[in-house]
Length: 324
Length: 182
Image (cartoon, rainbow over all chains, first blue to last red; front, top):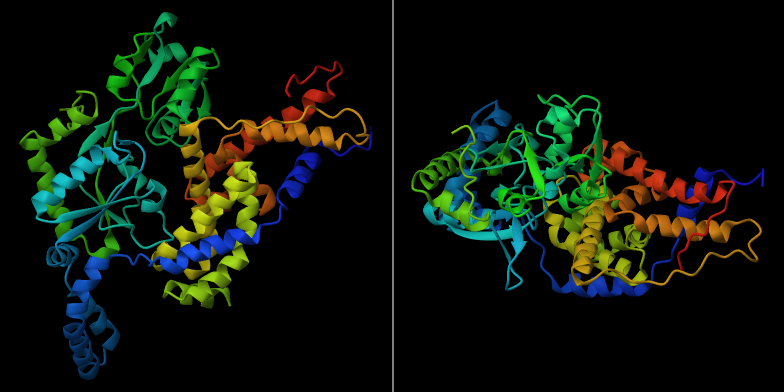
């Protein structure tokens, strides 16, 4: 037994064997049958249709610049910058492409379709901007990823505003504030976050609650606490129930979810997370985002956002900053 | 050469896309098999990833990122399929009892223990492990590929490794205890 491979060597061997499965040829056959019949999705299709109309004047302008000046490169850049901005292009096309997450705060509705707060807000926003909305479910990581062209004209990643890189995205004013709660068992008698010093506390992996517990950004970690991560609020609740952790920070549970659980007590937790609509800076979104900001202000002022929030978040209004 | 194929496929060339798919699919399939723990589901995940790759290829900004991008599409496809299956019901698959006879090196038993431990992991943890072990990628590259914080990937690999080590080490303690599974 002494010459037996180490534990780590055996794990590596297992991966080597398990990772060497031969791929059946039928997979590619099936995939190619589908791709041969499917069109590719070109980014900003509607916007390109409009650009096609502008192509000739732009080419003429660029030609004049090239012919008339030694500063041809600078001139051609100016010519591109003078092209129509995103709002103009969308208004000419009559449609705005919107990306929403396929998960929180969206849900699969009764008719198996995607429904949720972001979709409601996007539709109302589009209606007031005079645009038809073409809504596509896109993972938040894909909206914010740097590999690809923008997933849509407007994107609703439903993450804290700090999640989007300001060098790449324009952000609207927040249209809702998502709360994260520090939660303990009501029977524990704990009434303050300090009561969790030295205890294990659960957060959903990669969520803002994890960052807060780890003391990232402006937050201060709870003295001596140990952060335990799980995949979901439900798993954190299970860890609380079985005593693995003494508390948890919620990720997707809203106030209505907590109100339905009287066995839990809420302590002072992280600040509510402002969530904004974003658009890629590369698309020239300045005028559009100014309109979006004004429209969000109107939706807030006339109570539309409040109503949409109450409809989707169990009667709670998350459309206003908790400081208000 | 691959870059040229990506550029051509991005412009709608089916032949170029299929040549690319043939190049990258064996690696993608290996990852899918590990993550899904089921050959048929792995085939479904790979097929979905390839279809998405074809449809979304025009939005790929940097052709040199094609490989990393397809890994991300695959992991997302695995996650989607995993969610769909959880909605239908938990996967039930018989795992044979621990082999104690005719396994002098103990490898058959090790395999079974590791299989059980790996199945305890969540799909995203399995994906991080598969990319780490099968592709030899460090955490920082996996994070870059999947568009996640490097700390999250390190945490997934650390936890998953602990689970797999524990599965083997439990059997090496002085007092043998039956696994009770099977």
